[in-house]
Image (cartoon, rainbow, N blue to C red; front, side, top):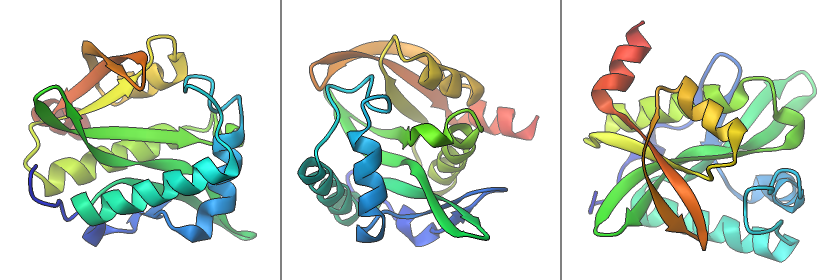
Length: 186
């Protein structure tokens, strides 16, 4: 994964209920509110200020440019207009001497419990396996983060190790291309 991936070319992604699209300034207010929520950020070092959210968005945009992929805005279109639910997508992550394609997601607390994370994550995995040669996709999840662990399990992911990331221990969850394809066909 030394060359930019071209996953952005395949956006927006539509699922039964969701639209995954480029995260840009359009969604900054919603993103900042989500990242400032201490409940949403329970398993992160801390909630973020508005300025930190702006920096986060700039880093995400830079990943689009450098890698051709990053986290995408997850939108639910409805009669009242588009509703920002969170973000989900694939980022290029270096762990030790290896480069991985990593699934990541954050959802506003109001979006919890509706299956949106699993739906968006499954679409992101399908995108990654369809348009890259990655043999596996990983997710970094704090061991105590039971909601994210359940999402990973529903996606057919399994713990394959642990790493120190952002000063915190994270389990490395992974799913191999063949296993994802097999689970998708069932």
